[in-house]
Image (cartoon, rainbow, N blue to C red; front, side, top):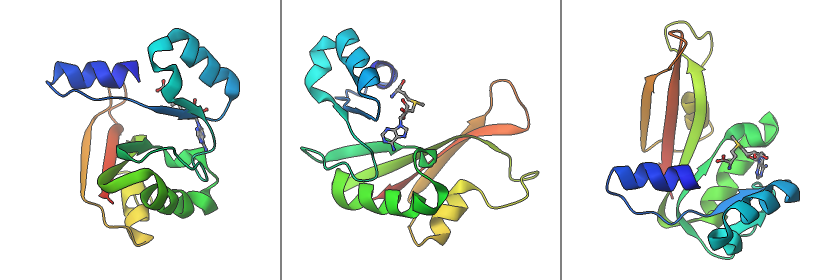
Length: 140
Ligand SMILES: C[S@@+](CC[C@H](N)C(=O)[O-])C[C@H]1O[C@@H](n2cnc3c(N)ncnc32)[C@H](O)[C@@H]1O
């Protein structure tokens, strides 16, 4: 939460971050480090968490749930967590490049589930030339 606010601020964008995590201990640690945001750090499982409010930008990883539940996670977040007109951002972390990866990219998999990909970004991995950092998004 701190980093994303800092990085956005460096680019002239002001954001108000909110956080969700599964282990209560981790949320408690975050609240103790960031008391000014204690009320906006929640405990829950992203696949069925009912938020107290909707959010304009929601970032998730798909590895947070078993593979067979990943389409359900995307559907839930779009239907229940992202605000109308908002954006679900899926950060796949680092992925093997298209040229050497044997199967589809995560973005292609999500598109094959029937979700429209509105945009994507990629950039070289810092340490491994075979990989790249990738992120893509879906508009709610
Ligand atoms: C890469 S870490 C990010 C940690 C922290 N939010 C940060 O930005 O530094 C991913 C976090 O997602 C949490 N997580 C994994 N599966 C989850 C789920 N189904 N629902 C909510 N949080 C989950 C993990 O416990 C872990 O802390």
